Each structure stands twice: as C-alpha cells, then as structure tokens.
Image (cartoon, rainbow over all chains, first blue to last red; front, side):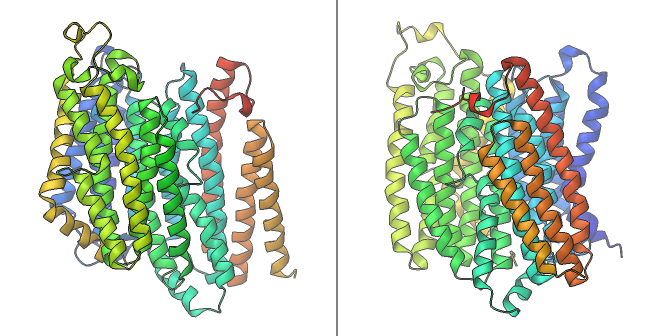
Length: 481
Length: 100
C-alpha cells in the first residue's frame, strides 16, 4: 500500500539521512586542514533540507502513514522544522570547537540525533515512540562524552547515559503496562480503549507516573533534573546548547501528544503536572541564584523554563497547547543564542566562570549585545521572544482559571530576573582586571557571527512580529489529535 | 497453562530488583546489569500481555528493545573504559568532579 504521501511524511528524515551518508562518504577524502568544511556541508545541507521540506512536504489533513506508525500532521511538521533549525545553528557552533569541529563523526551524530527527534515528534505508536526516543538519546550520550581526553566530558557522558538508561527502562515498563491494559500500541486506539474499558484509574495513575519519569528526564523537570547541570557543564558547549533546546523540545512534543492522545479522560494528570511545574520552576530558579559557572546557571535556568512551559500543558486546552509550542520556539532561539555567546567567549578565554565575563561589552561590543538580547529574552523582557512566550503561557493558565499557577509563574520570573541581570552586570558594568579591555579583544569567526546574528534577529522577530509565529503554533496545536 | 498474572507478578518483582540494584550498587557494570534486568522485566510483561491479547505487537516490541539495549550497553562500556583509563577507578561515588 504505497502512496506518495508516505514519502512526503518522512521527507525531512530522508534528507537528513542522505546528508549523513554524503558526509560519511566525502569527509574521509578531505585533507586534515579542510575537515572543518564538514561543518559548512552539514549547515548547508540542513538549511537545504529545511527549505525543501517547507516547500514540498507541508502536510494537508492529518493522516497516519506506515501502518499507523507515524502521523503526518502540522504538529509533527512544525516541531521537525524547529529541530532542523536548531541543528543547523548547532552545526555552526560546532565548527570552531577545538575537539568537535574537525571530526566528521560529530556532525554525523548530530544528524542522527536530529533524525530521532523528527521521528519523536511524529510517531503515533508506542513501538515507534520508544525507538525514536532511543535514536535521539544514544547519539547524544556519545556527543556528551565526545572529548575523550577530558575528564569532565566523559563523566558527563556517563552520567547522562546512566540517567537516560534507567529512566527509559522505567518509561518502557509504563509502555508495557499500557499495552497490557489495552492490547494495542497505537496511540489513537489506545486512548479510546482506555476510556471504553473497565475503570482502572488507580492503575492508570501508576502508569502515568512511570511515563512521567521517562519524559520528565527528557525535559529535565524536577525531580528528574539532577543530570542536567552536570551534563551541561561537562559536555562540549555546542552539545549542551543542543541538549537544552532541541532535546527538551522533543520531550515536550512527545509529552503533549502522548498525554492528550492516551489519557484525555483522566483528570489526575494535569494536577500531577501542576505540582511538577511548580516544583520545577521554583527549584530551578532558586538553585540558579548561587551559581558561579555560566553553563551551570544556564542549566538551572533551562530547568526553570521547562516549568514555565509545563504550565501550558497543565492548562489542558487548545490555547495551552499552542502556548507550549510557541514557548518552545522562542526558547530554542533564545537559549541557542545564549549558549552560542558563551561558546564564542570561552573559545577564546577558556573559561565559563561568570566573573570572567567582566568587561565583555568593551572587549567585543557585538558579543555583548548578543548576550544582552539572549539574557533579557530569557528573563522575559519585551521586545524579545521570551516575553511574548511567557505572556501567552500565563494567559492560557488564567484562561482556564489556574490563577495560583499563573501567580507562581510570575513570581518565579521575577526571581529569575535577578540572576539574568547579574550576568549582564558583569558583561556591561564591570571592567577587566587592569582595565585594558582593548588589548584583549574577542574575535568572532564567521560561523559564530552568522549564527549569532540570525538567532538574535530571530529572538527580536519572535517578540515583535509574533502574529504569524503564533498562528503556526496554533495550527500545530489544533492538529494534535 | 500458567495463569497470566504470575508472569506479570514475576515481571514486577524483576523490575523492582533491577530498580533497587540501580539505586544501591556502586559499580557501573552492576548498575548496567540491573538496568538490563529492568528492561527484561518490561520484555516479559510485553510477551505475556501479547499472548493474553493474542496480538503480535508486544512480541515485536521485545525485539526492538533487545536491539536498543545492546546499543546502549555498547556506548556505556566505551565510556567506562575511557573513564577507567583516566581515573583508574570506575566507582560511581568517585565521579564527582562536576557538582554545585
């Protein structure tokens, strides 16, 4: 039963795989000094894949393909485009990384994990979902531990692997029970079978907890967040940036689809998620306050952001789903910009301590401006994307009468402003020791310049011309199931 | 024919043993074995539910899980070897250079 739409449904994945094979064949023939071009090849290829998919693979009416394994709809498509964009930016950041930039394998692993994320966003069957999650995770374990001569990197990779393996085993046990209760692995029929079957709300509650462990790890929600700061600090910075954005977004894509499809009638999960969201925001923000390492600070900030996005899931409405999708879009652009700026700085200085950022605005005004845009957007200031995203998420909560949750979210964003502005204080107000910043410039190589400019423009666009972006998020949310 | 609930009970027991092993043991190799136990507990549940429902989906799932488990362990062992080279110890309590 072959139809052309089957190929269109997986066009981004086919292009990713083709790009990976081209990279694998071409790269060994290049001389060692040209190996960095693998980064340009990956970037160009990802950009081409993004454009070709946008032109030819836009979904019409939602439909399932490949025997119900994948769902071809706007929701999956929108997330796929986000992942391709994040991977393209990450490939630029990887190019001038000392250990990653000249190794074809690192780009190949990036493409493999992006492929897994694309499948995560569109899978409509438990078998496919499990395989997609593992296809995403295993290359990320390798990438986190990629710097083999660096103790911190191997330790980060190993910790990520241990947490990942245990939580995915727990997730799998949840899947097996879900299959046992319903006799099907298809998400569409699974929800109906659960609703039609005998009342098992106690057992289903247990299954929801098992699934939450697995997905909570992916989105680094409290109490499954312990890996995040260690892994972000130890892993190569481009990988940490990718982990905190695309990997988290993929986790949310699965969380939304799985919970809305399988448990629409179970009122217990929004209240569990409300508790998780509150804890995630509060603990993430409080632990970010005392940090002295900027990568660790960004890790705790990314935990807190998972909490804000969860508010939209708890709202359990169309606006709520659209707000989560928009939040993730704004968050991907903003956090990649933040990690990119940190990378551009620590590549020259070899440090990511916050106090070493003193005088950055004089050493490199443009990099300082990029930091300003990223951190103000993370803090939720207009006119940046982070502001609009927070407003919509809180609006979704208020719309459903979740006033307490919205107020907790707003109080948390106020706490967060403190530590974001603290970083900017070092960047803009403090001077370097000796006050001779002009003697220590921070040159930006071309890949960094391109990526930082595009991301900074994107963050401003998301915050000013947010209409079309929100319309697309809405379209994606409508198509969920 | 043994009743299906015994298989499910066995799988729950195996899963619990695996989970406790992960939490208690300090040697990463034993931790990996415990994770394998958890995965196989899920496999057992899948197979017995599949025979209960008379559907093949669960059996197919098990094949994929075994493949994925092998891939995961391969990456894990590679990282353990690398950590052992630089630290001469693989005790997870000593992997504490990242904290704060």
